[in-house]
Structures are given as structure tokens and as C-alpha cells.
Length: 341
Ligand SMILES: *Cc1c(COP(=O)(O)O)cnc(C)c1O
Image (cartoon, rainbow, N blue to C red; front, side, top):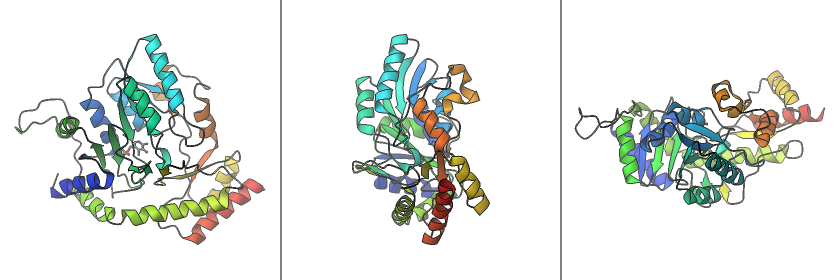
């Protein structure tokens, strides 16, 4: 918690356009802190998508609350606002859980559709916690991710758009009281009296060394965002006739955390990339509702059909700001040959 941490928090706040930033040890803790500050616990329902990294739903379960999954939009792979309204109605009808919050995820760097999601959440007095772990630097209707819900979490894990040299994260909000509670929770629930603790907290400090690295990288970040966009544009030009390339809504500026395509011939693409020595990843092969850790929620195959279909056809290609045209073309040639033969 050296001076670089405060300096970074101020710069991140200016970049995103929010008043309070709480730097912390990871994206996972950045999701956990606002849930703890909101007093989330047993009997509470928190709505999120089954097509995300485990951490998004894990933090809900860790606090004893229940993640309620909502299917995704077939084009953006983000939470479908209509499905959210339906899931909320079902929870209210059954009456066993108290709806408290929504965690939309800006998957692969494309922001979720916050206007309808926040409208639904507002009607039911639910908080919206934006999982911006993959979307730092993106924008929705001219506003940066990190400012789109009531509170937002991002990650500085090296593979994210703004990566440190190890773990790190940050929480963003305009709610001063929430920020103060999260600052306390970040260091064991401390108060201004250092040895009197007000609440059960965490050791979720952001390391000063990572903060110093992030300050340096932040000064290059706008250029890196443009470079990622250039890579994505070149991929799309060369792959759109042979695969389903990402659809970015008109009012959105993507951060290109990942570049992911859909193909019925994913197995062929995988083998071809492996043979060519080109790295790739499958985000995510098993939707959260079908993972062992959540069997007690009682879900079956077919519960979230859009998510399940996308999970079986998706593959992510190499994506970083320093990919050269020849490298991009070689990836595309390999994919195109695999799809067309
Ligand atoms: C990476 C990631 C997280 C967790 O971030 P860590 O820094 O690895 O703890 C949470 N949500 C999503 C969507 C992520 O991609």
C-alpha cells in the first residue's frame, strides 16, 4: 500500500470517470469486496451469466449466497436482459431467495447491454456489479467500462487488457460509503484506529510493485487499445467469410481482451493450430451451471441453450497489441485451411 497505489487509484479514476477506486490484490477480490460491503450472504440471490470465468459466480457462493444463472445473447455472449427479467420473475415467484444484485460480465472485452439491465435492476432495487475483468478500456455509449453499473471490478492479471506482472485488481464506484467500507474490508476490516477492527475483512492489498508497473503501462494503454483494435479488424477481414467473427454493437467500443470466433469445425481448427504451433484457448468449454462445484443448484444440460451452443463452438485466437500483420495472416490462413478442407 505504498504511495504508488494511491497514485494509480487516482489515475484509474480519471481514466474511467468515477470518483472512487479501490486497488486490490486480484479481480476475484475486486468482485468479493463489493459483495461483502453489500452484506451478501445466505438466502440472497445474485444474478449472473453461466458463460464466464468461475470467479464471477464463485464469489457469490463463497459468501453463502446463491448464483442465479441467466442465459446469454447469441451475438455478444453477454447477459440477455430479457432472460434476466424472466429469471428474476422465477425467483420472486418461488419466494425462497431474496434478489439482491446482478453481475453482468463484459465478456472478451465487449460491454454487456447496461441500459436495459440497469433498468430491470433499478425496478427491483438490485445493485449492478460490473465484471469488467476482460473489458478495461472498453466503452458503452461513450462511457468507459468500470462506470457502467453501481460498482465495477476489474483484474490486472497479466492476460487481461491492462496486465500487471502478477496479480492485481481494482473496484470502481461513485458511492462514497461503499468505497469506504471496501477500503476497510481490503485490510482486515480496519478502522481509522489501526488496532480496532470493525468488520471481518480480507488481506486484499494491491502490491506496490504491481501498482508501479501499472502506472507505467497505463501511459501506453490508449496506444495498446488502438493496436488491439487493429489486430481485431485484420482478423475479422480475413475470417468473416469462413467463421462467425465477433459482433460488436454499434454503440460499443471493445477492449479486445480476447478475439473469439465460432465454428462448427472447431476440432479441425484446434488440430490445425496445434500442428502449426499457434497457441489458442477455449473460453469456456464447460458452462458454470454444468460444473461440479454447482451440481447442488440442480441444473441440467439444456437449461441455458444459447450458452451451451456457444461453448461447444467457440475458440479464442492469439490477441495482444504487438501481433504483426504476418503473424495475424498466418493464424488466419491456418484457420481458413482447417475450415475449408
Ligand atoms: C480473470 C477474470 C476474473 C478474475 O480475475 P483474477 O484477477 O484472475 O482474480 C473475474 N472475472 C472474469 C470475467 C475474468 O475474466
